[in-house]
Length: 553
Image (cartoon, rainbow, N blue to C red):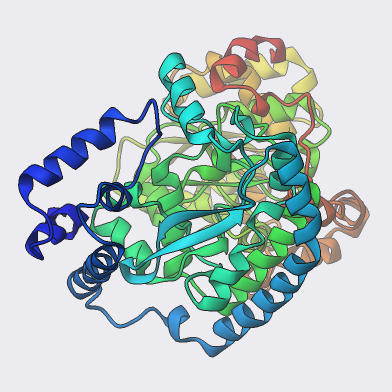
């Protein structure tokens, strides 16, 4: 990317020679401790090597080179959308009106705390590589840059996070807490240099290290706010994580998404960012997992999961599971230890979209298990044991499945007595039966959370089992003793309505009373107000969970 660098352009224009450039770059690095970091153009002007007019011409040429070379594709739809520009204009006018009201009070507070300039202008790179000055209220001491750099050198730190910057004044902390320091940026929005919502505005130093993917982030206007700004983990995000969020915004942009982010920003300003309580998991920032009420759900399509699954404990979270996890510490702890958690609910699919992190596909246990059997139709190494159902139901399911598959993929089955999990003698009988069966896959369908707890408790005694499924009513479905809801009801997310109709005495309370608070908790998560239960080991590191798992046996 050297052809886009300012020094190379100035030399091409005959305004600078190599020795002058080398001297300026050397001075730039030498004076960091005493003066702070200075941009190359500003340093050259200060040394009277070039004129301000020369710098403006060079920067314009730089922007044109970047635009011609890296943005040959048609303009991004957001840059031509009249609704987005109209929203920017209206929003910036309202923001500037607020600025006029706040200005006397903020200016006085800044000057009394740390006399000096009221505003700071920071060089940024905008749409298609064009540079502009981003305006904000000053929140630090006047010589903050030099002091910050000295402290960073003493402590061996590259930079300070905003919330712990030692040079922020007391007034500056208050301004940053409510994002008042950014109100002057409404001027940038009105001028068209920024948008209310967009990508994170990069510094000139960041752009030096851009690759081709990063340059594409400049296909839209940078924003005052964006997905990165309202993310609860933004203070710990890496550059790559921010870039991934910006890319997602660009690829999925709709005017609706801007309105959603603006709404999130309003709540974010009022309540502040919530700390990430997942510690080791940090699932919200992982592209292969989606966090709903703090449960990390693996984001696979059905085909991807079948190809991925070679061993492990598979859970299929649904709304009922998530509500039980709010109260059941044992259930929450084993959930943290599971190898896979795949979405078993269309309601959770809707919830993931509502949270802005959509899941790829619903993989319910009642769909996954028969598809798994068919996928391994010709794989003689897969041998399954069925555990569940009323007396004789598991054996009936075994016969029907084997008939459909065309081989004895189900090698044995057992329907336990009611309350078997409390009788150690029957549990040991089942374990011996499974171990003698030559099975390496176990499917347990005795209801949740009983089935998950039983697997977790006895998993270590089942030495030959490589894959564990908790499948709920799937054994009854496969045996033909219970009918599933029509597919159209499942796709719409109202399968629960059919199940209430089929078994109202047992299920009405679950769906209409116990699971209903899910929607309130989901809204709180959307607003950054959700607090997971403190007992759950999901909020410790995986290693800590494993060390404490013996408490569940």
